[in-house]
Image 1: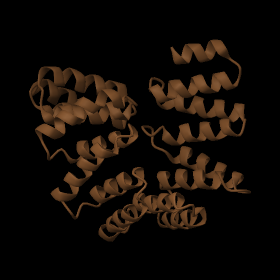
Image 2: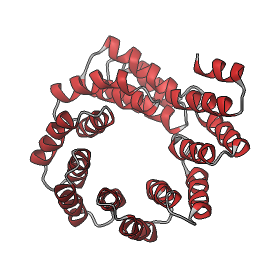
Image 3: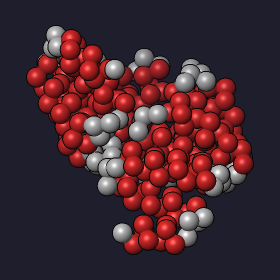
Image 4: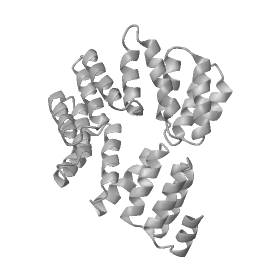
Amino acid sequence: ESMVGFQQAMPRDAQAYVLLAGAHQARGRAARAVQILTDAQKRHDTPALRGALGLALVSVGRGAEALPHLEQAVKADPKQVQAARTLGELYLQRRDPARARTVADTLVRRDAKDPQAHLLLGRVHLAQASAAPAEASFRQALAIDPSLSAARIGLARVALQRKQPDAAVVHLRDALARDDRQIDTMLELASVLEALPGQEAEATRLYERAAAVASIDNIRPGLALMAHHLRAGRIAPAQEAVKALENKAPDHVSVLSARGRVALAAGDLPGARQALT
């Protein structure tokens, strides 16, 4: 309530809108955060608001809408580092490693001691099937920040690209030993183990643990758990996973899509149609 009052008292203060939206996101009200930032950006177009709006849109699965906001924010203010990182990741998701490489190179030049910049560059190299430079970038990130589990995940993906799943498991178990609540590591290890013979049960436990410890604004583990159960033909557990996701983010496009997938798998065509339209 105090933040609402601050925002009303200083309607032209972009940071007030950003903070107010952040408070809503922290409470799992991402759609409300998007609305606040959308309204604010229409009234006061600043790089900070555009960047925040782009990040909020990404958080609710609206990456295509986020892209122009992030591009304009970074172009207008190169100091929007988080917006630039997210922009690079979006380019990778859209299978545009050339543009992602431009963003990553710019971030590395801006601050060669930023481990996240080297991490993004490593991911770009992976997308371009360049295992050796990818490994070098991930190791550089770890040299700067040895606690960066995402870099160990990157090394695991390099190993997978080289057809070395056992080496990938070693990297991921090492990362999990350093932080046993690291959700991305759990999901990555579960994905690798799922493809190995005799490892289905451990993969399931990892997916379930990741979903259990995820914060209210993190739906990725729940989506991964649902997809894992569907791949194994387990409809009832997949339905339970979707129910948990709907409690977290009922309006998220990925959750609606997941509900439709599970309904289709269960033979519920009306339910699938309702979720997907």
